[in-house]
Amino acid sequence: MKTGKILLPALLAVTLSSHAADGQGKKVVSSTVNPLVMIRLNDRITAMNHIVFEDGQNINRWDGFDCSTQKAVKLYWEMLDDKEAVVRRFYGDSYGRYAAPSPNSELNDVAASLCKSPGLKNASWVYIEKKSQYDTPILLDPASVIRAKDLLIAKIGFEYNEIQYDPPYDAPYDMKIEVHAYNCATNKDSVLAGLDMTPEGYVSDSLSGKAALRRAADFTNTPATAAAFKQLCAMSTPSAFKGEGAYVPQAKKKSVSSRLGPMLPDMSSNSPQWLAQFPLPAEIDKQAQQIVNPWATPRFKKMQWTLIWGSDEGVPMELDVQPNGLMLLLENYNVFKAQRLTLGNLGQLKGGISLDSSPSIISELHTNLRFPLHQGQKFTFDTALPAKGKDGDKTAINRRCEVTGSDEARQISSALSGRYWKVACEMQSGDKGEKQTLAWLADYNVFMPLTQWKDGAELPVTIKDLQITR
Image 1 (cartoon, helix red, strand yellow):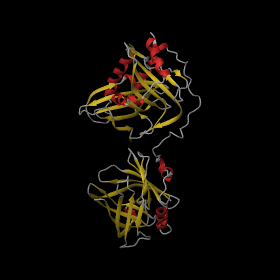
Image 2 (spheres, helix red, strand yellow):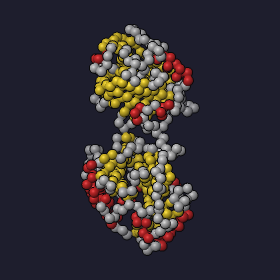
Image 3 (cartoon, helix red, strand yellow):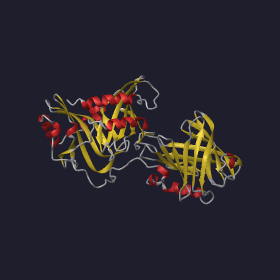
Image 4 (tube, one colour):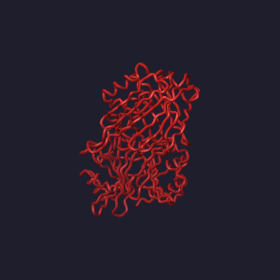
């Protein structure tokens, strides 16, 4: 048995335990680095630390170490239930969605030590078969094979010609690695872990422990792989396994798969591209544009601000005018983003969140809103989402609004000019009622919130750091 490969992660766990909470603020009961899923690929090391807190909570924390720079990065961490199923996963600040590794200077000293370790060399793949029934080469890393009596531990790799993305996190990979435990006496094989590897060489998604064992039926060996295991069992030195020769990496830079590329929406820079794939019903699109044009055509291109209400941290907002006069609002809640197509920043015609590949699109719009607004004007703005399933009900949001006064727009923000109409609204959706007060900025033709509803109360909001592009 190659004990050095087992002892190294044990020592690493001691080093990582002081950083294990990673902002959790709770006492760590145990911290264990799993030696079987440690891998060095393209001079980058990935390590998984299983942490148990005093309240019984379990998490897996995945860290990366770039040996070309001797710098550490955070990959992701996941909260587990008592069956080791993932309850929540965070890639940095991104909840439930892959995000690129972020610097982790606290572990740079660990990177320097790990990268010098003789027990953590780059995977040296050989072909089990150059083209399998899955139309991919199947690889094995002989140097990482561990033999403990009848048990054989081996890493099997599958290389892809394109960069593909795995749901539900949209995790990119161009290689998958399986960690196998093969019993040489019984010829029984178990997959202990499945790893998605990025082109850079880090783990982007994983299945390990009990969760991997529950998915045993998803893993099958080709005849050539089964034969390779038997050959390894018969060898006194498994590291001498040659297979079909040394692996030759693809020289051409890989492109993103057109068929298995990202599924979750790209909302960066408030791009309209994703939502544009899902058109509004033609009659609603026409109705919305007729309300806006020509009496309320926006008089700006873009607004950006931070919205603050109550004791909450501010939410960055970005509002972009579309060519048809409607407005696209992006709300950045840090762990996810929301994007909405609106009429003058009032209500939502269609929209979605960065964690979901399916948007919500209204099927009904009923309103007597007309511009320009005037003192005492009353209007309704009612929308409905279609029912989900045969037995579902449509989701309606009904607004009753009244123009109750006016004031100087600079009282909202010093960046604003002109005056605004104060609009008080009551909203009803099912048995839930809310109140909100809006400002119609006459110099810009856009609604901005003056209050928000939270915990049963209408709270004033603050518009901070407003920037306007005319």
